[in-house]
Each structure stands twice: as C-alpha cells, then as structure tokens.
Length: 92
Image 1: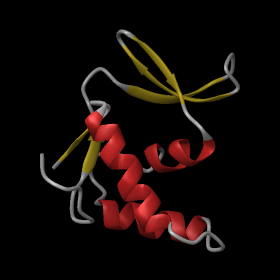
Image 2 (image 1 turned 180 degrees about the vertical axis):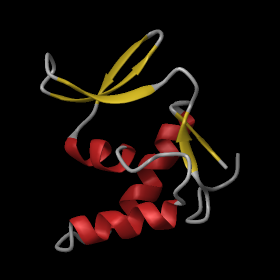
Image 3 (image 1 turned 90 degrees about the vertical axis):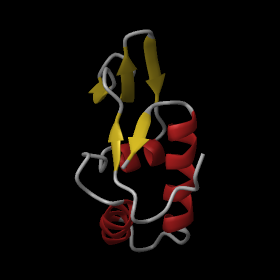
Image 4 (image 1 turned 135 degrees about the vertical axis):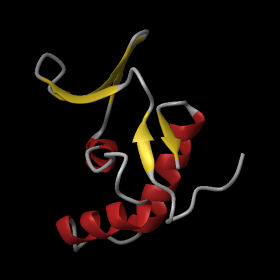
C-alpha cells in the first residue's frame, strides 16, 4: 500500500455516509454493518472529504478554520491513512 500524499483525493467508500447523529450527539460514519462515532477532529476532516478536493485542499480549509492549531497537515495525513486502512475511504 502506498503512502498517503497531499495530492491524493479522498472519497468515502461506497455504502458509507458521514452525518450528524442527534441520538449520539456527534458526527458518525454510517455503513451497512454499523456505525463509527467520530470525535470532533475526525468529523472536521471527514466533513471536508467530498471526492473532489485533494488532501492539500482539505488541509488548507482546516488551517483557515482552525488557524491556532499546529500540526494540521500531519494530523490530516495520519487520520486519512487510518481511515484508508479501515476501508472507510478510497484515495485517488
């Protein structure tokens, strides 16, 4: 498996849906076999994943939204690599 790069374009895998779940009071990732409750950081990242934006564009959007946060690029790359390993997303 190749390393995740800023030029990659992530998209949710078929059958997965990102949404706010009032009953859980958090964002979740729904899929046919279940649900993943997401923390705020994961939700902020997955909320940017649309199948069109590169990881670099996602990082830029999050830097604009959270200018006081350091290490956004590393956090995004690390999270998306885990998401890919768990088969939540595909990279193009």
